[in-house]
Image (cartoon, rainbow over all chains, first blue to last red; front, top):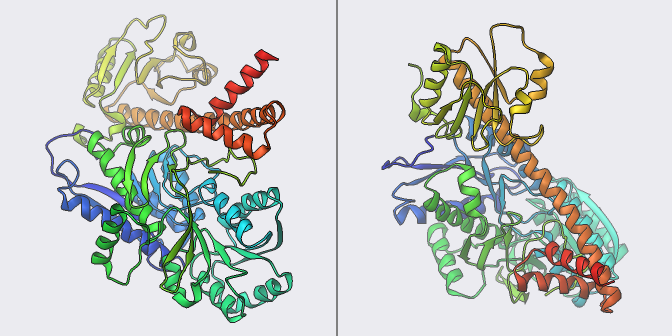
Length: 381
Length: 196
């Protein structure tokens, strides 16, 4: 790669790492689509400073270690410095040492458990103060004080639950059960969990189950005869994509906290949704992960337009502090922590596979990945 | 000619480089090779008492007194350092260690060895800087947590706020004043200490 600008028409090459196969494909495929849609839009408008944006894609097939290897290949063999990718925290943690050592830049479009801060990652999904806090408060005001935690067995659910447990306890709530299942859990694995939930009788189930087993959780819940009106599943990760995979009737009545839902009003979102559907099909819903994957490419392209250079050392200072009119509202990349200031919202799934907004923040909330400004408080505005 | 300037990684082109080694034919070769990376190269010989502070990379002979000529304390380098090992005498290993070099380059130089040392030094220096930045940020985060906790305690005891209100107050002030929450917390702690 040349570090110098010239009157070249050579394309800008960027890496894209999302699983198209394996148990994380349902959601990661949508992130891939959001990424490609943004790249296509940028190219249709003439590229960046007259140069086309070319994605180099690999499929890490839902294997965390493969993400590290693919990142290595992108940076070393393909000579690429900017990578869009990763859904699970374990895949991000596999890519992190690679981009830090070789001075790459990973754009990570997924909510995560916080407590991380790499000079080589831009985080565009929600940190815990931008989803868990609002969710905990809403659940306690609406359904009661007894939580049951169920999660996939890897780093994100355990860390996320550590934060949630603190919040719940501080607000006078109680965690009456906690269970972790393999990322590859099958439907039958959820039956003993349903029996435990019946015997503990919590007011709500806080789920950090991700991937294909999300469907089995909600289906098992329905089959076990629980009622989402009084005892819903609440999640930070169940989006329109998972609801579609499990069936609209299965998802109806359950709660998700996210900065973006497809149903959001506003010109920015309605035009985004119609472009997405035009590209991928009328039945294809957008979701929070698509949206972050989409807007982060635009933030990158605007920055590249100014630097005209793919060096991380040139890009990063320009990215920090930049703002963008995203489908969720105006977002900005927080200059102190490289995370994104976002709009927390609470949605409840309806019979059409969409979310009805039950609560939304009146202003963007600053990312606080270490929860410095919160203590264990759930009250915020 | 096995490489061309246009194929160089940006990490090693267009730099400010200072060279402090003898002005013999090898010294000239070193300067020439570095210039081919489109870098601005200053050849300083005899070596100045204090090396310039505005360079990206320093190439210096390993000689007694080198640590004292470097414009920084060990552990806080401001530039990548390549130490040049002379043919004779045998290198002083303690001295080498005390210079904390990012790469070494042996006389007599070859064109390849110069580039190898440059890439090696820049890559190691850059990585160390990023790790240091991350450590600094973590330190800052821990200090912030402490400051916010203290400020909260002050608000709770002097303003009769509940804990949640105190956190909310701090976040609100930070937003309104466009400051970080730790800056607001530090100001509260400072003024409380002055007043009490």
